[in-house]
Length: 77
Image (cartoon, rainbow, N blue to C red):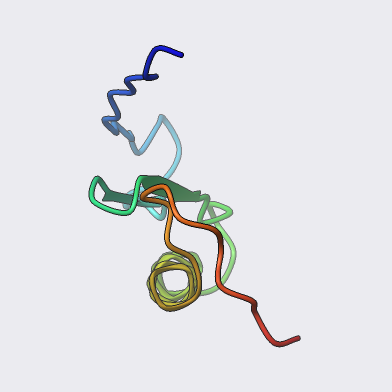
């Protein structure tokens, strides 16, 4: 079976209405995952919410799952 090769990059723009960009992204090439969080433009503290979401999900994925070819580690719910 041939290997699948992925290339990831991210671009986000403020748009025509907002003054700041509330979107956040995270790419982990070693563990092979990426995240995108939309800050829901205009909502209170949208940039903080999207930053926190990316930070916490990335941390949890890194602790819980090994995407490098081994079986996933069981995650307590």
